[in-house]
Length: 270
Image (tube, rainbow, N blue to C red; front, side, top):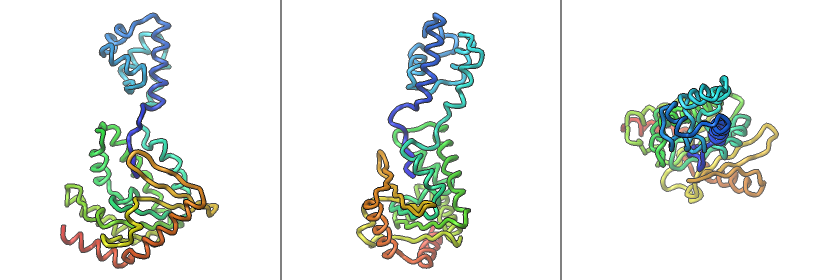
């Protein structure tokens, strides 16, 4: 998945910062005085109160003690942890967890459900704009948790993966070798099909990544990813178009057996 940074600060940051501001105002304390107590400059205090910066534990502790909040401000810390999934992806995660079948096409990247931890970290660490270590850890944790659904033997997974994704070592051949071996291992599960889409395959593969899910009610949902946002489709016409597109891509891709051989040959060259 494309787990991009939010375009604006999380609501929890803004709500918590506003609460600190209300307590501070009622106590008749200036930002400068609060900053001196917490060990921050006045501008940093302002940023945290306005939700542009995540309120730190030290800041909340100082505010709580200074304003006599008796733990009420400290208690907000648990709601300030980074969200492993951005808002536009949350609905998709619900459908993904409940789906009977998932068909995924990724032309340039290894699908998130098949990524090793090393691959995840490399991708998240190269995110632009730059992100902090805590954000990376939360994203890795969230993506690893999602992979548990692969163990549900009653769910069907098909992955059509572009040759560029398989050939891109992301700067570390050894880590990429482990990634390919992991895919071969997962591909041995009877509920998982992995197909390689070669460079010279169908033109339908040039239009970008997408997934098609089948719900427990046998409805189909489609998910398209983009650079700055993604779309979740339930419109029958749009979903049908992507279903047929996936079928075309899968038809022109290597068979599961040929794909496994192709990946093993890549491993041998690393």
